[in-house]
Image (cartoon, rainbow, N blue to C red; front, side):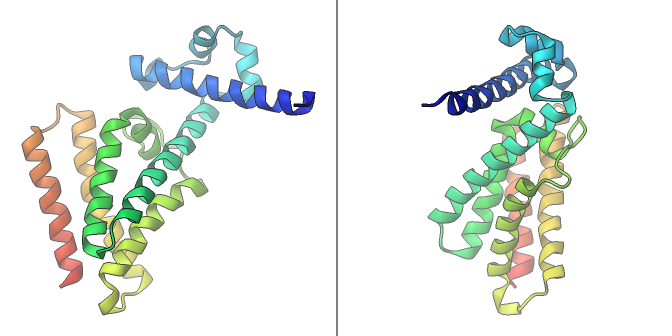
Length: 197
């Protein structure tokens, strides 16, 4: 490997190391506990070196948001590949979205602005997961020949209900697991029924 390739690889590894440190700090202390100084201390670099890779804390939040959407999209893609039936696929995609939110609480918070400023506006990575849902909804409604506006409306209906329930659980004390599961399934099935009848 030439020196140019080695330098590029080291830069990429350092950027990843910074993001990993930031994410660990957030998992331990919450988003309010994140600072450039703490990241530098965690990876044993000086703060000015961190600024060479990320101009400010918002740049780190944006990078973590991108990482979150790439991860979410990858998980949704795996679900989509396994299930042929459009209705079952749509339900399973939303269940996977739900699972992702709780397994990746801190990423979800920054991706969707739960108790922290959201950085997803203008990110192409944010489009891929949404497009998976829109395409799945389109397949369920295919017989009705729906307009793009109607399909987007149904997507936002799903998103509003499911994101709302996730937010209630992330911000507050949450609901008992059995009640959450019942509300989630009722909501998903109710909306699917409304678009497939």
